[in-house]
Length: 193
Image (cartoon, rainbow, N blue to C red; front, side):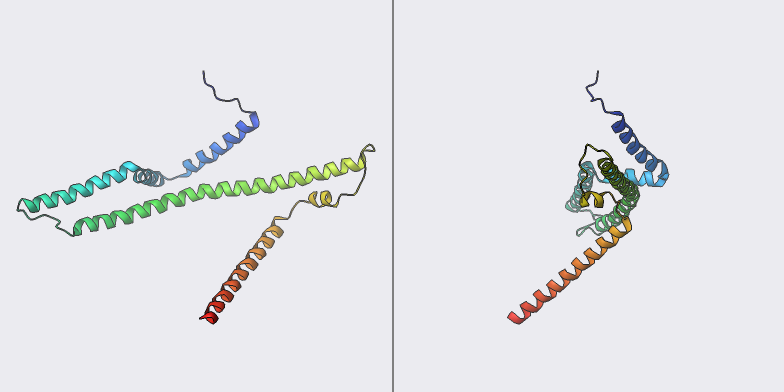
């Protein structure tokens, strides 16, 4: 018998929807994307660092041992071949990581879009609830009918475009103020010298 908690249906439904988003993302992945993700996952494990370290030690040790025995080592110090191999491997690992990250960014963008849509929807629902409560307060004779300007403002759903524009303008103003402060700070330092 498991001791897993019993979740309300709406939470189970939400968890199922998130799991389905991840399943769809994985299903849309091409076989090459899946292979690249597996390679990247292998390279990201501590075992991989250990394996690379062992290979380096063996390479350097074998070359050193051959030199001690009087043979010409295939890759004497400064280990030009080893450097070339690690350079090429580094490029491939970097590309593998970039491919994997690009694919994972698609999932993150889908989650961000979903979060944004839900936030806008929740804001509209909250505005509707406030509007209905205000209407109920006005209609019920047992409740005092008093003006509430804040509730009236909150009952209006926000315009996402207006909010984005205000955020953009505020951010630009802040960046401009930072640049001006830096310029003034730089001029102050020059006059002190």
